[in-house]
Image 1 (tube, one colour):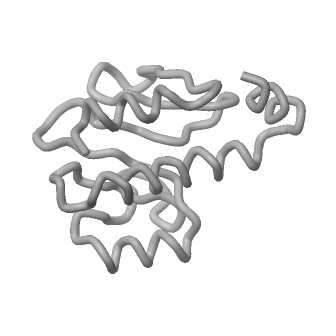
Image 2 (tube, rainbow, N blue to C red; image 1 turned 90 degrees about the vertical axis):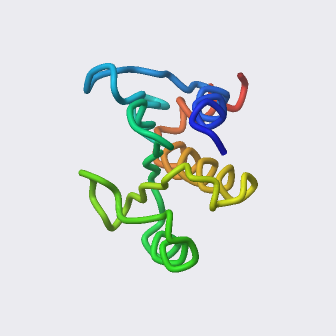
Length: 118
């Protein structure tokens, strides 16, 4: 998955908002005011940091050399994935979906209900 494809997937979720609180080098995707993805816009091939269940985070890190602990994030709950093409697109999409779903599950019911209607 390319950086542009990752940006498109993140932006396509219901209620997803793209912001730049850390400057122009990182696209931050939030839902309900909470971060679910950070996409580095500098560097080649780029990377995306995603929230992750701790057990699954360790599993993905063991399976893919391109997946490591979250860069400048809580390493137990975040992975950073290098977008070098070594993680197949379906698995990458699963990682992004998982991150979004983790955040949505922790949102108040009223916000979750609004997201389901959009």
